[in-house]
Image 1 (cartoon, rainbow, N blue to C red):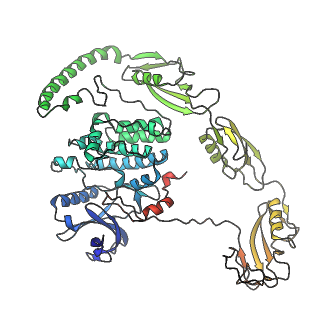
Image 2: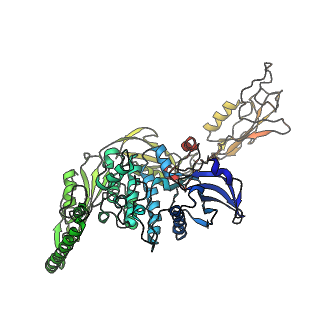
Image 3: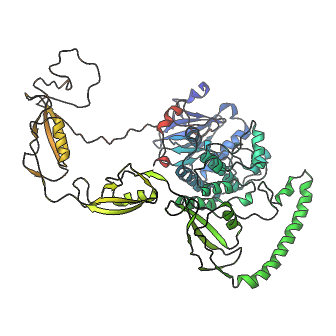
Length: 634
């Protein structure tokens, strides 16, 4: 580390004053610096001295600057400046305060569905932008995803990105990347395209959903072989709380054959957003062609498993086979078009209500050439778990289909059974927000309106059953909504002579509020009310604040407001009460209203050891407990 600290405090190129080291990676050192010209904090990624003359390292370094300079997207780290001199090679980047997604997952384990969808959606929009520019990242991994405190993610480190119109890359370059996340085609040294990034993202989603990587072994070579040949354990077997739809998206993204994956980021993004709208959705899985192998490869793909000479023979056979298939398909389609496409087939929708949604029924729908199924779940009474509650369209209605091409869209709602939950706290909420909370908890509701002095019109006063009581999903909660204060005004009593405790109890009883409390020296007994802001017998509305003046005793000491004037014992060294006091000439007041200011702790900049473009400090793990991104807030 000492070798890299020589730049700390220096100003390079008369512009960038380096503040401190925030990360050290395999190729580069990352510094935090201040740009005096633009008056902003930046991150400077500087190539290490020992590899500054290595041609391949410099090429990757320049490659990154070119790649990011071509893009402008809120989820991709920005590059402001590049210098590739003989003695100094650096990239000036946007400075982001946060941690890597890898460090966050290491601390948290499996993430929530809300976090997975939020982070994946943002990464996909970044990849959609990059792929649209002809750029393939080739090293998508959580170490290269920066997570900011507001829940925003930034994709970083385009050092091995494949640029449009770039020279043909070497086999070594093709297989480069972090072995735990690379696609099968990268691991085997084949050509890559945007679908390779989607595979890597699928592996990331697997890790976010389960807390573990899909493939691990003792050596990188073994992991690479597993990426090519092995099938991962289904995520639902490792985390039964995730929805089926999420497992399906992960499965499609992690297909071994690129042809069976999402073909672009937009397709994957569309299903992620559909899952976001309805976590219970179940997608129609793409059908396999006949002759597929058990491990996800089609029969045609298995032709390429031979030795060096075999691909030549396979290529000839494949060409002949493709020609035969195309010819047969053309003739068959011409026949089908004249009989089926012109008219289609009218079907009567089957009745599924009351049946059980089993794996057999799911398989039946997957193989159906007339139904396109969507499954939703709900808690309800009158049905057992797994029973189909309702369907859309209704049974016995008619739909026109073209088998295998134009499907009948059908939605089945399946009962989750019953579960016992606690009534949520709704008092003080707007009634519309309260209804949404009850709906989200799978509870029904009915409303009643009452007058109330505390809660404004439209706010929830109470519920029946009350807050914290147990209730089964699907049951009804009565929500009492305020119509405003009761008619008439409240007569202020005489607080003078009462103790503080007695005065506060009386205020609450009358639906009044304690206002400013002033402590002064007075001959009245310590803690006695000696003055009030509103006179006895005056009329005020509910919720009015009443200011009170309290005696601190005849020998009240403003420098020691909590010391008993009659106490002759040595001064107590314990911390004083938070109440402040002064003399009668300058009384201090306290407002019992709670302090709503927040204290936030900025974590040190995170940096994974493998990642040369993100941030790290030795005490990051200590502060991570205080760091909860917005995507994780309920």
